[in-house]
Image 1 (cartoon, rainbow, N blue to C red):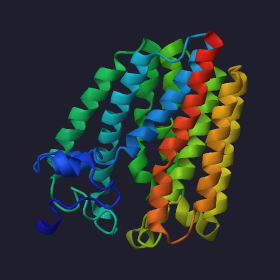
Image 2 (image 1 turned 90 degrees about the vertical axis):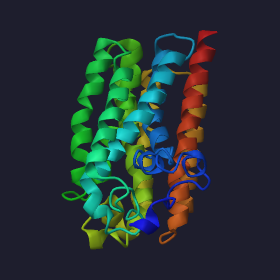
Image 3 (image 1 turned 180 degrees about the vertical axis):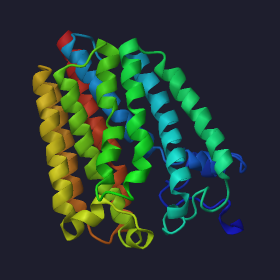
Image 4 (image 1 turned 45 degrees about the vertical axis):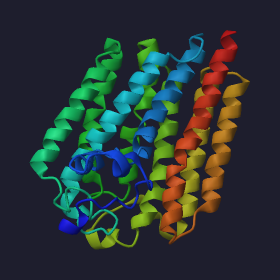
Length: 312
């Protein structure tokens, strides 16, 4: 579609670097990999960082390993791009039926499926190069996540809770951060993973509120449609479970006061989101969804500062 060749996507931040600085020929590929929407890789990254910081405190380290944090960031950017590209290849026909997604590079014809596949392979190779920097156990844990990633795009066709499958994939860093530092998985890692799953279901339900009118037309199922008029309650229960599981992880890791301060700040942010939810407010739903980067960083800051303080 000629009129959508260089059209910024509706959920991309205004004035993002792709729309402002990237060569025009590159923009469809960068948009396909969601490089214009960094919130996706932030949300993939933060459970890695939570787990790494929690493990550092439990193992008596002076904070998480900075090199590992950097590797997690590079890996999250690459694998978020790969996952989004794969998702769009699978969903290109569905995306064409939804107002918010019909101008994405694949359904609008800016990128062909074959070109998207080449991009997918390149991004996966970057992710593999990052994964191979970790210990053998962490590599095995990372590879195991690919099964969930592979089935996720099909879940919106068969279940009313595709957000749960997304959570299983996006929260995987809750296991990776601990495995990378400890070379094993201990109970706190499983609880922080569970917390990240519940958090993901909550924030992605907020995201799905944007499409609640179009999804039935396209035959797309979502937790937002499942919760319906009780969306605020459903999201609130997800966020409450996330907080309780994070609390259990902190207790089992024998963390100190600053970890609890970080958790309190995280909880307050989630509570603010629940209070601000308004049915039919698509712009507000997108803003709340994107604000979860800050919520996750608050918890990470508390866990990191606690690990540093306990080592002094």
